[in-house]
Length: 547
Image (tube, rainbow, N blue to C red):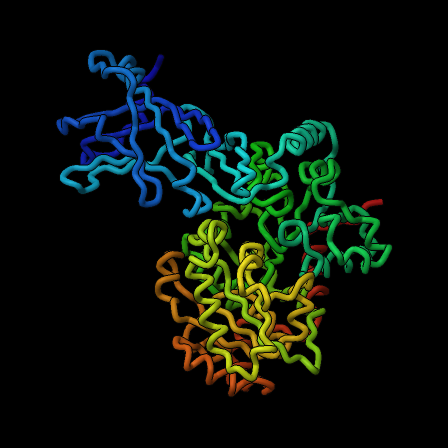
């Protein structure tokens, strides 16, 4: 069976390690209650006398038993592997309040200490770029989908998230058919999109309208059919809209020559879609990709675990062009993003800023912290138990009583639906876009959200709430690019500081010291960002007119 030859090549982990545990293959069964992993292990024991029955599977901080139904055979290597057939049962309930993406590890303990820890690999003998994905198990009563997938590095990943529309069999069939049709259709489309292919208010929509005005005919914009903004879009732009979840949407996703979006390529179809063809397409590097950014990314450092998707080769296509607002922001990508060079960037400013306005009578105090990936599922299960929710409560309590009727809560899009079912719902304005709310914003309170740059550009004052900064940066395994010296607004660590700064800054002009700090990160203020970007795209022939 060739096992011995393969293992001699693949088990070379140095003399420091006396025991190697290698997963040969994993298959998945998902029921309403459990995720069941079955497969084969190779256990290479160098005088440690490892007891395989003491092996455990570790996910986050939770340990799960590994069952070996057959007795171990030590005489013949091939039979030894076959005898190490294992079954692992993981109760889904244990993962509901954990991370979105969960990495399983084999561990072995001695005297209560972990002495061996190995990632669970998907399939030792397969191509690591196959992106195997199990069928998503839909748990309607929990508003949850669970699936097991192969990561870009061949690791097993267990994903637990809200139900996607593409999880349902009907959509899976449409996606697979679109993939088949894409094999015989020329790949010449340019598709544009914003967050979750649902919005029409940021840089992608601004650039889209500019390109249509310039006579480009192969440009298409993906948008959710239920978006209220569609009725206000000019008819000449409506002609090139493609509705999300339509067969045309899926087909254009597979045949696009270029993707231009404010978010990662996954948003061009559906974020975290459990479809192998879609995932493989996202990571294929077989299309041009222009990353407009949904906001200035000079905030949580790009070398943090939570920003790995935006590193070249991590989640960002290697041929990506990234739009930044200054040489300082470009430097951030180059130094902390891995493998980036100056040629990967267009220093033009974000197109959305060209149409960013603020009303003269703006009087709202808007609260918008960024989301916390490590709390995502906890918020889904019971929002009021989450530290994120308690932070929102503390910020609201800190605002002076005379301004309570001015408060607008603007939770991150990924958590807003969970907050709507709580007492804080009274501060959320229904059916209003972020752009509409920012037009009425006098003060923005945030922690590490890029919306701070958007609000300040419009003329609002920004206050930073960093009470839990050190803890949050530990979770991100990174650091903030902003600090007490370069933040373009007061930094608060205590409720009393926040109360004082709201009193001091409400209905006041931005201070010159904050303006100077801001303009080191956002250089352009001439409303010509879109023009500069179009010139760059034309020069590099990323966009071309077709007859």
